Length: 145
Image 1 (cartoon, rainbow, N blue to C red):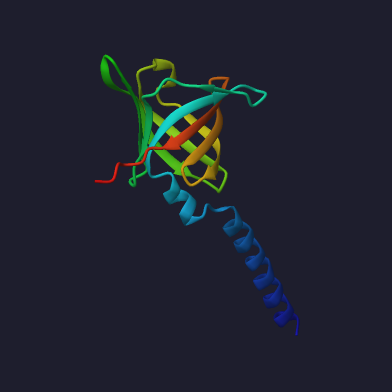
Image 2: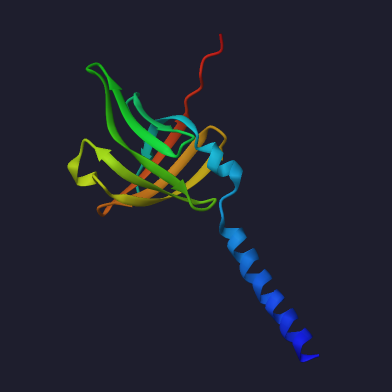
């Protein structure tokens, strides 16, 4: 009888820990929602006021979990940053910066809060070297032929 109760207790505890860990994992859909080309369209200040950004700041999230941050301007296109990303939950992802034109950012890892306001609008908030950032990104749509 005691053995049955201890087995039931073990199973209950195991199910509790498994279910609580599953609840914090990101959904497959959210992992896939990042994939594509995104353009930085605005930054926000601490009160939520948006300020537009000049066009041409792009971030490409690839299926192999790498990313590139590009700047496109009158002088051409440059890679500003690249590295890997990992989606940790439905509200948190991280970027591992492996290359950056700004040497202060090289080899940094940052955890970033995110929310998809729509399928094509992504808001992110994070901190790098003590500087807080709040950014609004729009998915770049490929023109139909």
